[in-house]
View 1 (cartoon, one colour):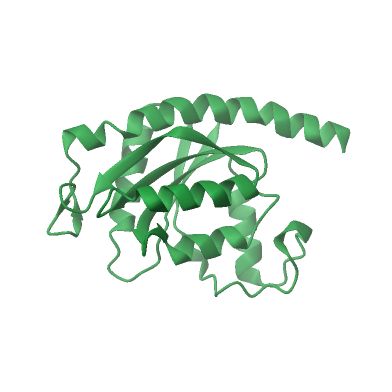
View 2 (tube, rainbow, N blue to C red):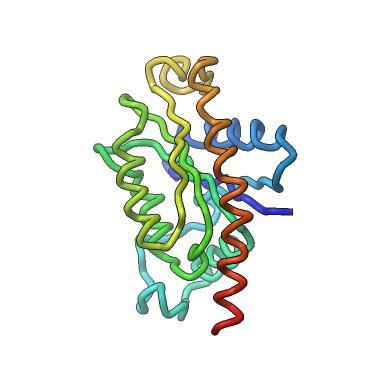
Length: 191
């Protein structure tokens, strides 16, 4: 079965991100169309990018990088859950993505964002990063507001309208993930 990671986008203490990612996981698992797993970047203790070689070489020196690479390589696709910080993607997520390259190539991703303006600017920046990593990102986006989808700006309780924004993301992501497997398989044959 297709494996899709729900990847957190923040490591901040007291973060809202873990609650949003857990909700995405629970909603996705109800579908039965893929094997979904939560991958928390906080579990990998990734320092500010500290690998001597560019990620494309896959010459990882640090144990944290090796563990992160092995985990990400397990999946066919991803849902990145990102808050918006300073009109951009969260620094922890940008850092985690910068560690790897080949592990993401020719895979598909969906994005779920949140912030004062639904995280739209984080989504736009994340799309650029994913494109550079050769990740095909679907057009639909799950978007949530800090003002209406969080109780006291901290407990994730999405409105019915915004909760409905997740299904179209997964509806696009699952077939794209399946389709890109043939791209990866053909790349391995020609290598």
